[in-house]
Image 1 (cartoon, rainbow, N blue to C red):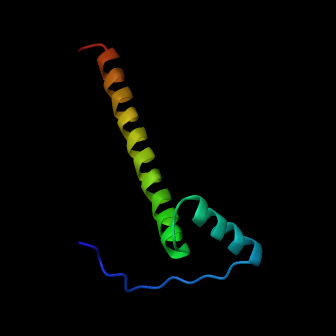
Image 2: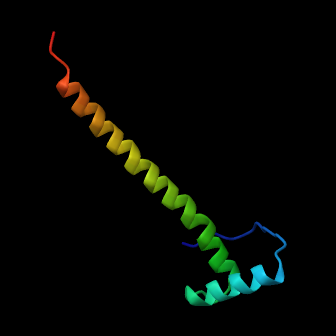
Length: 73
């Protein structure tokens, strides 16, 4: 099920920025600029969340290792 897209986001860009976005859209295999921009904006958010989760898990493992090294009372 695809969700209905009923919100609009607009921004101004320079001609050079527009050409760059247009070229990236085609290079990444998207047919429409809106599809590419939507993907690019949300992909970064997802990548950040995934990296944050990796770091959290690594810190938990380090904490577990530290607990194992503490002398037992």
